Length: 226
Image 1 (tube, rainbow, N blue to C red):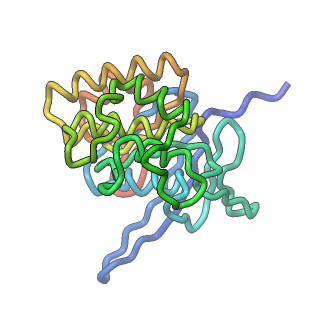
Image 2: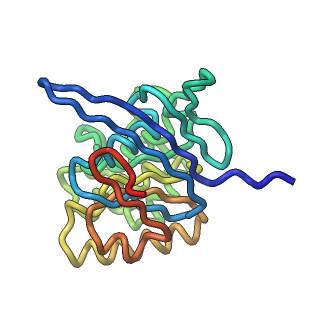
């Protein structure tokens, strides 16, 4: 009987060139960790790796497989669009739409196109996550009216509303103060356990690594340290 494929199987190459400078990303890893952390300094290529995995940036070569399913395999001509990969990606700055209410921002995670959800949108999944994150009383507010923690919860609710197969987080606590970071790490850990949802987190914060990392891959200058 053949062995089961790993949860994460990633082998990516991409050359970035800008203003006469060149950066080569060559990332390869296989892991069964359900909470996997890419750890390293700013400029190591962590965010670009996550963006390629999510389908937001193209690779020059390589593959991304989740539990054996190819989301990207350029050698085989497979390149699923971002919305078909089942990977929920949360940006470092949360990327909330300033002209949409909190409820509309969460509902955008269910959209199949780029039309804005209506202000009166009522969807059970949206309401579920508003309730789960204690955001119902703020549902009509706009992002500028929210605290840092409320914006982070809104972005996480938007990521989860479409029931993703895995969660990709880009420095999710970097913009928050220390006490709030500690509380939200604990909330995220409890949520992952409840949903049994795989996580790939990138960070340069050792506190994230200690609490959230079942396996930690250290990244520098576009490569995973062996």
